[in-house]
Image (cartoon, rainbow, N blue to C red; front, top):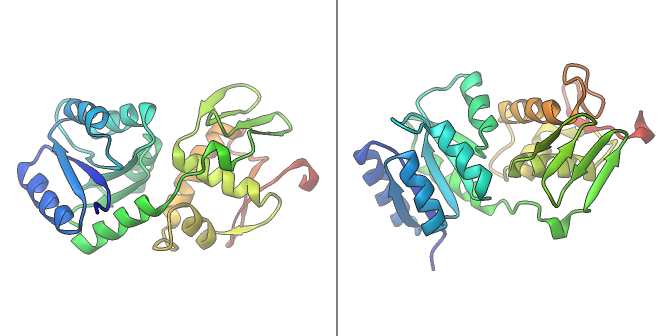
Length: 232
């Protein structure tokens, strides 16, 4: 039985061949694409469970491809990058990636991240309350949108998972490690840049003033808390 379908998107033939060999040996069904444009066609036709997407490609770049895939599909996306700065990681997450891994990487590390991404079952509309209203903030879980009193923004799958977990534990301080493992999987726990990046992105969408958060507040040295009026 297949462990899942993976689409490898990279303009370097050797990388595509290497990844195809490693992933096939691990029990995955694999297809590949060499451009962003080709990847969009393959996502529609092949319907993968996960996309491994290189960030640096000619033509339609990895970030643009990620945004296009994310706008039309709930497929998992792991970005492959030779860059390792926090700004680049935030840019990848902002484009809709669920995870990223820096080249060069080991096969065991890649497989662990793939397992974590595929194991994580996103929150579905059936498992969520339809809508949450807190002050001027309205989170529509079924539509995957948030209205902050001024603008309406779309939530990526990981943003939805994160805000869902926090609202399920409203007015409680949730530790970094607990959030990471709940949203990304048990292999995660120390990758604080993930939380910092996603909290920054969420605050831009849910807060009237992201620099003075009213809902998604920091618990120094501990984690984060979703504050409702009962806790204000």
